[in-house]
Image (tube, rainbow, N blue to C red; front, side, top):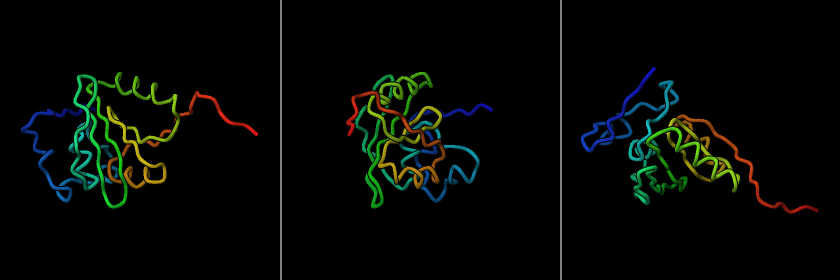
Length: 130
């Protein structure tokens, strides 16, 4: 199955209200790799922090959770980002060409709205022992 997203300014999905979009897991699909669409599905209007060739990143603040949405133009950039983040460890919600970073206990609630898989990355730095 192949899906396309224009990503252009005229993309109708970016202008849809959350009530007009189906919840991703209920529809059996996950959110497309567009910061504004993912944010809308979670009830947020993002503030774009990074606009680069290899990624876009927006920050969202809601009553329930603050989180980052990072999208990538190609899956190889998603994997490179995850490889870099693995140094720090932690849990992330990962979809096709996107990653959501939030407090671990909030990821399942976000996942219910946009799909994806919660992945735990193991840190590679020094650990403290007793």
